[in-house]
Image (cartoon, rainbow, N blue to C red; front, side):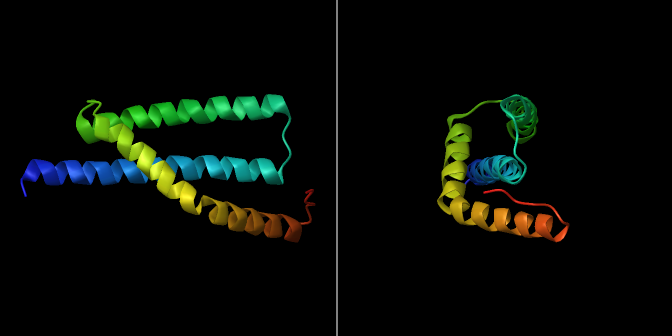
Length: 113
C-alpha cells in the first residue's frame, strides 16, 4: 500500500479519536451541569467558553495534522468519531455521573434529582 494512503488512514483515525475526545469533553460538561445546578446565564457562558476552546483546538489540530488543509475525510472522521462515541456514551455518562455523585455525597454535598 502506498505511503500516502497509509498516512491518510492514520489521519482519519486520529480525526475520529479527536471527534470522540471532543464529544467526551462535552459530556463531562453535561455531567457537571447534572451535579451542580446552573442558571441559564452560566450555561450560556460555559457553552461559549467550550466552543471557543473547541474552535481553537480544532484549528491547531488541522494545522498540525495536515498543514491547515481541510479535506473531506477530516469532516467524515469527526462525524464518525462522534457517532462512535455516542453509541456508548449513554452508559459512560451514566457511570461517570454516578461516580461524581458518590464522591460529592462522601464530601458532604447533596445531590438533587
